[in-house]
Length: 81
Image (cartoon, rainbow, N blue to C red; front, side, top):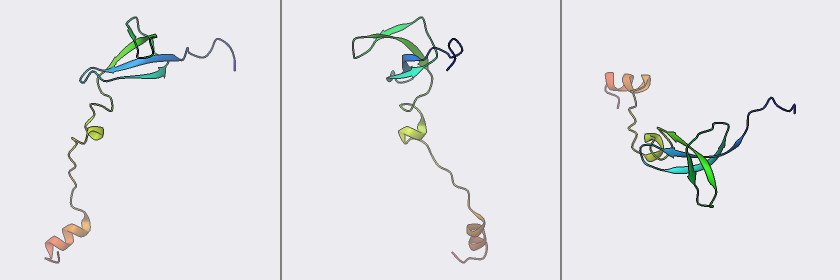
């Protein structure tokens, strides 16, 4: 790999603004704000709006609306179901 053309990849802590959930991951994003993590080290803190802790798909709060398919419409129309 060529030197000087790749961004700095380092560990950062992401925090969900809605729930306060935090997780450590690698990123090229930096931040002036830091936080002390469970391992005793300080890492840059990145605040995000949505994570798996607050997203409805992952929390099970998502509601699924399924439209009737063509076969279901046919069966309903002709009283076959």
